[in-house]
Image (cartoon, rainbow, N blue to C red; front, side, top):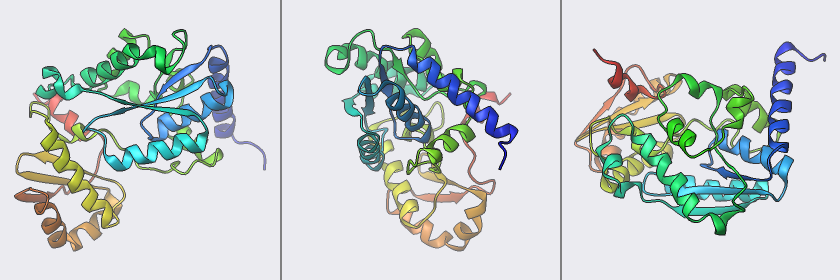
Amino acid sequence: MLPTAADSAHAAKCQRLHAALQALPGAVVAFSGGVDSTALLHACRAVLGDRTVAVTADSPSLPRAELAEARQLAAQIGVRHVVLPTHELERPEYRANAGDRCYHCKRELFLTVAAQRTAIAPAEWPVLYGLIHDDLADHRPGQRAAAEHGVLGPLADAGFTKADVRRYCRTAGLPNADKPSLACLASRVPFGTPVDAAVLARIEAAEARLQALGFRQFRVRHHGDVARLEIAPDELERAFALREQLGRELRSTGYVFVALDVFGYRSGSLNELLHRP
């Protein structure tokens, strides 16, 4: 079968990515275990070999299941994996959860990496993160922190979209190629509502209940005593059929009221609050 225009475009992006990575002395990859950072980590390992280190920030905003998966993926890819405890919850600006919460989170990670740099990798190895082209049009304050600390986003520079990173991971035989997008737990809390460890633990427990019931793409949006469930449109019919069980499961985690959002899951829905007149 002859290559299509899409095949050629994807191949060109991969060539640009590899060329950019070949110019680096090594790489410290901020690795969440999501599909974007997994594609980046694999590409770095393919191009730079042992001059690649994965770094995962460990805090209450990262579900334990995600940390375990990140460890497994790093081992499968064959890179050294450093898990760094971060302390964003000690930062008042982060706990306040204004519209720039992600800035303070990423800044905490990059400062922590810098403080422990000699134990992680040579100083001349740049830090890379899984920014993709799709992110450039979204509300992503973490990009400002990355720019301030000289952190590179080679996937975005090469033009990689979400479809590209999924295709890359499928071609590489990586197990999370079709993994649903999963932002940190704090992204479930509306801006202006303070974030603390107890809130994050409740959200993690509630989402674990949904995962145990077999739902694949979802968010538990935290509105105080109300859990607003965003579930992928193709799973909504099943969610409505199980509404009473869903209510009982989530009330067992501490919520008083449970609501199913009729519009279903959409990435970054809480960003809508930033654009209201």
